[in-house]
Amino acid sequence: MTQITWLGHATFQLKFDFGEVLLMDPWIEGNPAYPKDYEIEKVDAIAVSHAHYDHTNDVVPLAKKHNAKVIAIVETSAWLEKKGVKNAVGINKGGTLDLGFVKLTMTHAVHSGGIKDGSDWLYGGEPAGYVLTQKDGRRAYFAGDTTVFSDMALIQQLYEPELAFLPIGDHFTMGPHEAAHAARLLKPKRVIPMHFGTFPQLTGRPEDLADKLKGDSIEVWTLKQGNPVRW
Image (cartoon, one colour):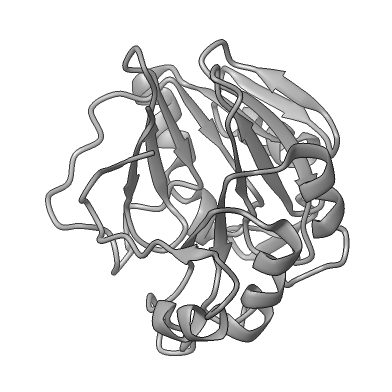
C-alpha cells in the first residue's frame, strides 16, 4: 500500500512500503493551500512535471536538505543542477527511471514550461506527466499541468493506470469539463483532483468533476490537505 498526502495545489507526498518518500511538484513557501505546520521529514526523490514556480519553488532547498534525487525533463534538470541540486536526473518523454521503490515513466502534457529565473524567462523544456509503477504492478498517472489530449487514450492502452491525478482548476489547466473527458480516456478506477482553489482564477471544483462523471464508474477521490490516505 502507498500512503498519499495532498499538500495543496499539485504537491503530493507519497510514502511507499519501506518508508521511501517521493514528492511530486513541491511548492511549500508561499503556497496558500499548503497545510499549516506540516513538516516534511524525509525525502528520497522528487519528481518535477514542469518548471513553473508553483511546481518547483521548493525543489532546490528540499533536495539539498535531504540529499534527494530529482527527476525532471533534461532542460529543467540542467537548470536545477546549476542551482545546486547534486542528484538531478534528466529524462525525457517515454523514458523510464527505476528508483528501486517505484518506476517513473515520463509522459506527454500540453502546457507551457518556462523557468522564471529572476527577471528572466528561460527555456525549461516541455511540460510532462508521469506514470508511477509500483512493485505490485499497480500504476498511477500524474498528469502535471495539462489540458486533455487524445493521446491520453494511448497512456491508458500502454499503462492502464488505476489512479489518475488530474488538474481541474481551469484557467491555467483544464477544468472539470475537460478533466471528465480525460478521465474517460484514461479509464482509472479513481481520480484525485488537484491544482484547484489555490488562486481565485482556479474555479474548478471536485464536485463539478464528480457531477460530470456520473454513470462512468470512476470515483472522484477528493483529498484534504495534510490528511494521508492509503492506496
